[in-house]
Image (tube, rainbow over the protein chains, first blue to last red):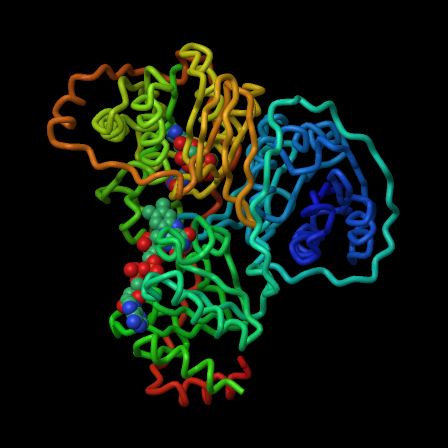
Length: 309
Length: 252
Ligand SMILES: Cc1cc2nc3c(=O)[nH]c(=O)nc-3n(C[C@H](O)[C@H](O)[C@H](O)COP(=O)(O)OP(=O)(O)OC[C@H]3O[C@@H](n4cnc5c(N)ncnc54)[C@H](O)[C@@H]3O)c2cc1C
Ligand SMILES: Cc1cc2nc3c(=O)[nH]c(=O)nc-3n(C[C@H](O)[C@H](O)[C@H](O)COP(=O)(O)OP(=O)(O)OC[C@H]3O[C@@H](n4cnc5c(N)ncnc54)[C@H](O)[C@@H]3O)c2cc1C
């Protein structure tokens, strides 16, 4: 039994954390072959070959695979599918764009955001914003699965998998890349950070969101936000934590001026330690917080930033 | 150009869901149901395209129990022109998988020949985030998932997408499938006169058999459970106490 795992690659660089977490999720399913696809992907392929538990790496380099447009990458994966029983990936936005398309090309169902592997056909996944956990068993010949990275530890390094070069599939030519608007930041990446500091509507303005950033920088943390903070323009869209944003499970999550709607909790309630700072003592966020501080964030956050060594 | 918008009837996003004691699923009897919020955004976008003269007809389609009529009437009250209901289940607890939904939608597309299909990014009940992408694969159409901006220019559309690193803009050939993300627009509320008018707009009823599509699920639900509860912690009285507790816990 063998598994094809789509590596997460951005601009030629392997996202080691997401890919290694998916490798550990897929480990029990069979021999893992990684597909590194991109305009340039050789270096990413070499990096993926070092992940423990990877038996082979396929590198496909082609201009059409450059910006992870769904159609050419899905066509490539579908052309390779006959050799594999499982086709998997970390549940990033790229994989959520591509894998359902692969599944439909193969006439099988997709299993999105799996949080646990029960056996080769059976997976656990959260539904209703994480308010229920469903165990589903697939009757399809091939299983196409994305794994929620927050639920798996990254596989270690030390592997020496063989790397093989393959060619791209025909580009269906349906879409073209125009531009990326990527916020440059020296902070840790949200989904892999050990500490996350998130701000909500309570922060009140884009300018005051700097309070959140300063606290994050003091802690060496990533910055997150509630949907309300993103919708109001205080924070960038890719910082949204929640049911329909990113799912995080850091060692420490600090929620500032966030009420704790179920859609937000869905993205952070598996964090190890949760701190909430909110001026409303009835805010639902306190029901999941290990340490709650009822206070005005405009006083508490600068004080906290100041007093942390 | 005709725009097709699939809309799903789901549990209202404000309702606290309860897992059924027998583990077979979530209790949906007598709870408030609404249009999937992402689908409201999709309907709104289609109506705005019509108002801007870029589309001439908006058709809403729903697949599910007969009560999905209410969801379609909401779409009609917002401004869709007509609706199609595919009666695919009798029990409110039966959900049709995205693959089957996509196959049915592909048949509707063959019949209706829209130039654009706008689906929601994900349904907030099963959170699969799959139907639009699957439909696009079945039709061999271009796909722009997680859209926060759509700009139609002749036979192509420029779509800005919400992705992990920020935003990506791509140009897709029409006809296309676009899936709507949260920041595409703010959906309007239907006015009372429009709700009245919607009652007279055409709503066709069909069955999966009319389209020759087998909706047998590929996934069997083995069990459904409550997630592990987080035990509530403590309130601290000051920033100093907070820092002390965090140090004790080894969190900072
Ligand atoms: C389909 C759908 C998907 C969604 N997906 C997501 C998602 O992925 N992520 C997400 O976060 N939300 C999501 N939401 C939105 C969610 O329902 C809430 O609306 C949102 O999380 C609220 O954000 P908030 O807590 O920042 O704002 P609010 O609920 O307005 O809370 C603000 C909080 O700040 C506190 N506050 C105000 N001033 C101060 C002060 N000076 N000091 C201290 N505290 C203060 C208030 O007491 C309040 O508790 C979704 C909603 C829908 C319908
Ligand atoms: C035997 C069995 C029993 C099941 N029982 C349950 C159960 O009791 N409760 C339960 O919740 N799930 C149940 N499921 C799970 C369910 O079938 C799928 O997992 C679910 O359909 C996932 O899709 P989604 O709605 O999240 O789609 P997504 O792909 O997230 O939806 C994206 C978009 O597609 C469009 N769309 C999706 N569905 C429709 C539709 N029906 N009509 C029109 N447009 C649509 C909308 O535009 C929507 O925004 C069951 C599955 C099986 C096999």
